[in-house]
Image 1: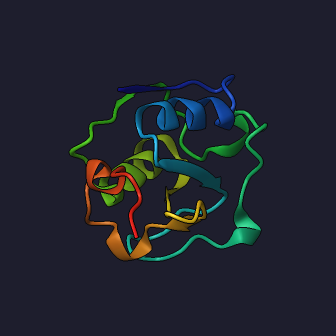
Image 2: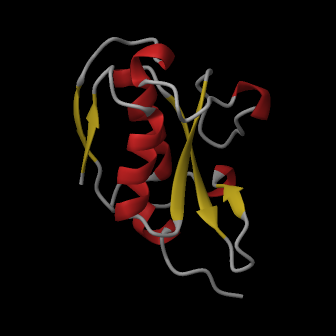
Image 3: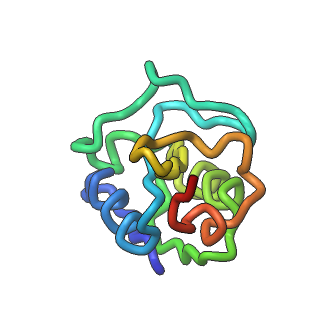
Length: 118
């Protein structure tokens, strides 16, 4: 799957493209980058109606090839390093809640995207 990174697109468009590929995952955007294994502060969460250009610190546009074999950490760090976007991956639990993947950033997107079980 390719994520198109262009200044005029909204964060919501990236969220929708990501979740269309990974049914039990979602991404949220934050004004600050974070290290693998650490949480993103809710006070830094960005509204998904903002455009990419309004939010990022690196002005590179392009396409990011996102594969199921990428780890969460690889995906999040790539989005930060190359596109200046603070991203956190969340996975859906069996109860329908969304939790940050901070303790399992080394898992692949495919491993996280498995259907929630008890």
